[in-house]
Length: 388
Image (cartoon, rainbow, N blue to C red; front, top):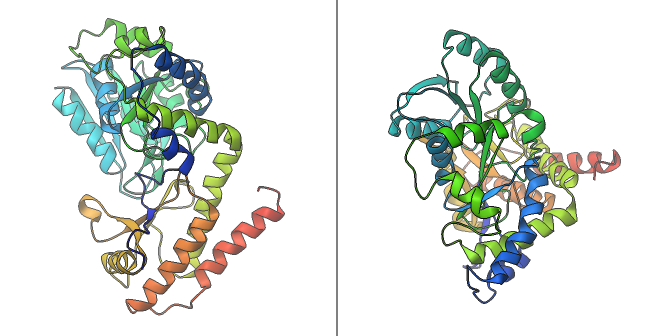
């Protein structure tokens, strides 16, 4: 194997397009100068369609977790009663953040690998009428589950006055998102997933309803104060030093998304999910999630007759293919394939082919090419149907 050749197929950070890498290598500019002001002017309108909002999408320098904490710090205060829907490790992280902020945190724990049912959330809210906010992950990275946030938003607003707050870190940019139409009050995502950038930026968009709550919230916050970011965004600036090189890259990433078209971006992600799932079915290796709950950005596989870590270690060593393992109690029990952002059907065909060799080498009996063929057939079928 070429020592510098790495094939990154994890659910973030995801590969960076060469043009984005080149954009980030531009000479530094002053973050308070006219050049940065004009850069932000170009970026801001291109973010809105990805979020499906007419609201300003605020840009913070920080990881996705900084965005999650921002969501908590700005909307609720100690003693407030909140519900966190937990379908995996990152829902659990939302609950931990809420606990740190001394909230009365209710956990609605869903078995890993399953999406939450809207009626389950409705029943819980009817028993807890004083909720100030409901938190949920859109795509649960640890399990490859997509939660039905559109329907959840309807239930939350029908049966409570709570804000509906969504962690979209591992799917926004790869999955259709319509904050305004669906009734999402606050949505967070990060730069290192479907947005095709390194980690270091987090994006937050809030509804008018959420802004009313944020403006009246006396919870102390400084760097994470969304009011500061909103007021500075109106002047095409940021309240604190931005990651200028990442902004260069963001502009180019948004240009690539615009050139491909959002509809085609979403179709590509759906196709890669379908190809991946078809491949493992053909290889008779169980998938963790149902088709209905499956994410277009990451697929979790739950083998029963070989060790997930044996396969991960072998393909990493021999081919430079990096796949993700399980988290918390799923550690060693599953492996996960990221197919988001700068990833194409060609990458999926390469990944499946390598995995088939890896399976043979660790002793699993398979028909070489069966998974690859199944993925190819999905691709060709969608080509015939005019999806591509």
